[in-house]
Length: 356
Image (tube, rainbow, N blue to C red):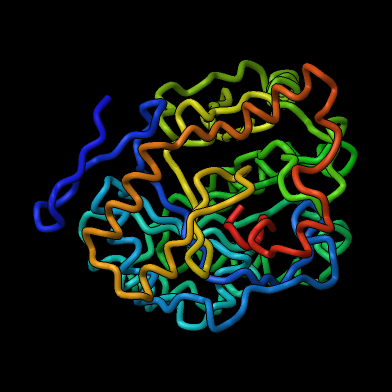
């Protein structure tokens, strides 16, 4: 399949990687900082942070997003770290909404600061909100995150509906032996807010966590649990490039599962990630990225930036989740992706820096 690029004034021109996957979705980290210390993401008390002078301005981020839109990106998701720690995030939303080629601007947040900012984000043009919610028990939340902020997360979730947002999603990382006893309760909780819960298989990204294959509750196991509880669980077709496979319960309730660990969806993945300082990762499992921040700040022309992005994506061969899955065949998938000592040397390798 040919990889094409037009002159910047000619509008959008799609680009495809070596497996024919389009460049369609961008996860844009606005900060590497977070106000939680979740066991599966940031279990250490302190980290090596990105230098503040390297963090891109909102104008620089919007400019970069425009170059991605030139090459086919239509959806931008704002992530972190915790993105609401970045002041005046609504201003970035407004900048992104000025580009009509970007059809959706979404936000993933832990919800702690959401009630304080939901209204201004809605008015700025934010389309969708996803809140991470791994438990409905306050004590378990404190155990998981190291913080006593559960009530504020609930306030944030409540604020979404009151503000006017639709299509609220709740993301739950499922860890065997920790929260698999709450899956039914989370579905019932989501109903109260007309939300859709998505269960995420525990992934072996990063390295500071205590991941093991034994802690993964697979998609098959989750479906078996729901079948025994609710009756027939019906798959919803036309997944497209979305990471979640969606299912319908007999009463019409819809939930999703993101089975990256046991059933990788690399073949359909159209997303990539840019860190807050402009390092571009083609895969969540990637150990190195492409620096877009430096050429942007050096004054590279739009055509030069487009060509850089186009050429890198056209050569993309990343199938990280499938590669990790293959290690099971030889018994080498026993721990995190990157050793913790290496994580301390390069903050970009942390999942909270690249919008995991």
